[in-house]
Amino acid sequence: MTPFDFLDEEPSRLNGYALSPLDRLGDRRDDAALIASLLARDDAGFLLVAGDRPMVRPGVPPLAVHDRATAEALSARLDQAVFLGLDGAAPRFAAPIAVDPAGLAPAFEPADLRALAIEAVLTPGELSVLAAAKSLVDWHRRHRFCANCGAETTIAAGGWRRECAACGAQHFPRTDPVVIMLAIAGERCILGRQARFAPGMYSCLAGFVEPGETIEDAVRREVREEAGIAVGRVRYVASQPWPFPSSLMIGCLAEAEGETIVMDVGELEDCRWFSRDEVRAILAGTHPGGVTAPPAMAIAHRLLSVWARD
Image (cartoon, rainbow, N blue to C red; front, side, top):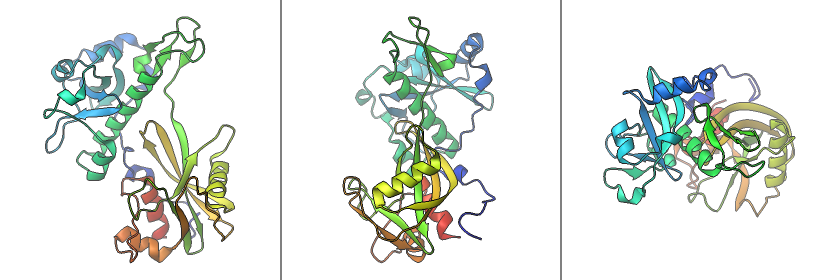
């Protein structure tokens, strides 16, 4: 078996933010009466966002889904609520809050989504719904005005569309595609690190997909730009919603066709080859040089794991 053979499992389901339990009812969002009735139900749950940080009630485990009384006490803008879907039979909505979160402690605190994922204090399903809530509330906050004519827009389709009454334009929540790839050649792979990374941590190379590009071409361009290495075959492995603010990480293995790394010093502070045995040691936390990988919830960790176990 080679790294480019088909995988029987679905690695995306193992990544953080990627296991939503919700039925999104995508074909019924334009039914305003249905959305209003779901919003009014006693079992409706609300995921509340202050700025770009979801609000949680500290505890074991922390509470991320709040009842109507809590939402109203926090001055949640339920007129701007976004319908996320049904969790079983219970409706779930995301809504911004209109108070300063600094005054809510210790009853509430703004959540760091990365920390929540790394610490695994929420179920994978709760984490996924919280990530979707953060992304959608953030998108609405930054897209109040029409990009076509500048007029103020209004929420439609349960929060999955904004409409401009002035020019008729419709605007939809965006997800920015990002390729993240492990470039490999035989028993070696390329990893890099940015200055903002934790000390000793190396990760896969990554970059945004540009207009007019395929995923494969984006992988080839990014590896060439960041490491100076040409890439041949590219194989998709897994994806991960990444709510910072709203990206889709598209994980791939890339077949390196060169050996000499020419690092982009504007992007990276180091970039080098690692052997498969080194990667296994990194994942096990036993690398002799103290090198570490991104946490298990990250797709970069998944790519390294898939290759290391092949």
